[in-house]
Length: 377
Image (cartoon, rainbow, N blue to C red; front, top):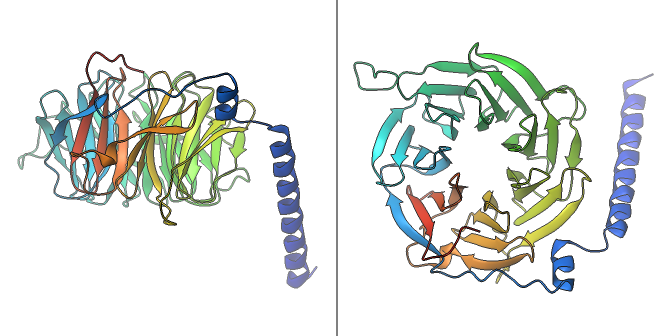
């Protein structure tokens, strides 16, 4: 068989697959006669009452000299690590705004950072295709810098995201521009499993984000430039458990819902979406109200402890607080007087859900606390 014939057959097969995919999508849409918001309204549910006094900016963390790209909280809630274009990781005391560590990185082009479950170590990754681990208890070198305690090498593209496996300081998962995710054994520095790559069910473009299921740490979800999110089981690296379609742009961020049965996504198409991992169905779409035709990309998302609120950061500096049940914006932090001056690049909720931290291209981080007598939602 000639090369031309093979190409022709491949094109025909691809066309058939796309046709079948479209037919499947239409069938699913016919079966989904409502979404979460539609059902909630039919049951007489009302939006969460939430205003500017309910989430108040109580601290601005200043110290980075470049754009802030990533942040993470410790499980005990009072410390934050941030990664910046200035080539440093800074560990902050969230209660006092004090810097406890300023770590000069071997590669300045950092994209992601994460705290270990014990809070004793931090990890980061970026354009050097490495994931670097720092033990915060290690003595500094003669120049006052904290040495790298472990370099995880194996990716063939930039490291876009990293997260420690809950309750384990010895394992973490990274996502990369090489279209794969990797589970690492930090003790040995070796790859335990590679998800995607040469396998057919893997992502077909750069992987931008990962989120590990807090209820079942063997499951994690990844978001990619191929406009899909994929669910993985760490025991079966050869194929994705399920692929989630719907977005029409890069999936920049993924985050598990508190109950572990659902997860949220944020995309360059300007929407956030909620998916069910058991059925594979999209439960809800969260589209921001646009006064113009400009699409504001979603950069980062987080859920409140109960899951009733979804916090979403956008490239224009908006940070919407969504009522997940009724798909309505109940507050825009970007419209408040002391909001960021640039794009919201990252955000995260403290472990107990009592505070939100946002990071921005304006080089600052801000801590937002639930105000007054209000209980954490």
